Length: 127
Image (cartoon, rainbow, N blue to C red; front, side, top):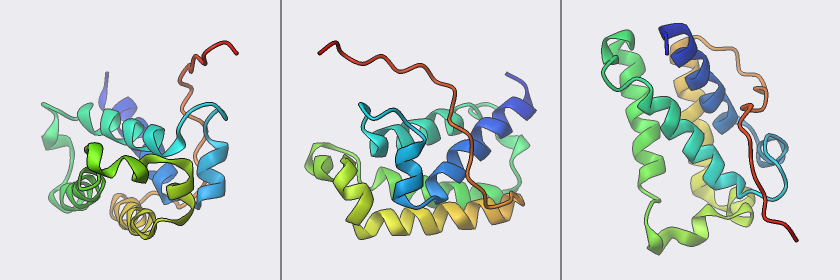
């Protein structure tokens, strides 16, 4: 994956995190957990820079690390209730994540806009 593709994936994932919950819901199919998908998209985009850290300026890295730390602070089974659609709507930490994502987007110089859906393929279970 080249640098422009890595940056495009990261921009889309960060911009998705900046959005209000109703917009975040619209970025994914109804049958997936939106909170999980937002975090997974971000972590996958961030992982794309593993070994390519020199492509990210120091001030960009600081903001990315702050956002990543905030998301990771809610990982683990004890925080399972945080990774629900209900929490995405109402949990105060999601507002902190949105704020940290906005700060990250600003440092990168990205326009605060609604990103397109990821283009990922989601497979639901048959009912």
